[in-house]
Length: 86
Image 1 (tube, one colour):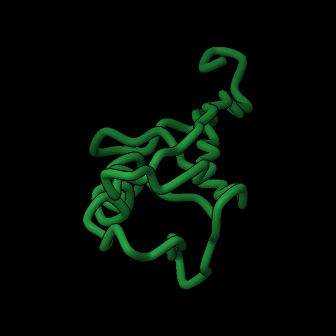
Image 2 (cartoon, rainbow, N blue to C red; image 1 turned 180 degrees about the vertical axis):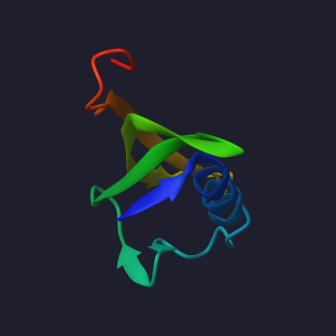
């Protein structure tokens, strides 16, 4: 599933507002717990879509710390198919 970068940022903002007592994250209707990777594919867009520009963000909830903060590990991969975008 591909999402524009703005949608991805909005989804991450929603994750940050979840109550600290929950040890799960719900993204796109799926529940994820600690150590479950969440893969978010996105396409390059700034008004218009840039053909061949794409990426993947992987978030992994590592813990909910003593302060109730959700702690994530992350990686970002450039999955562009256009050599000019890689």
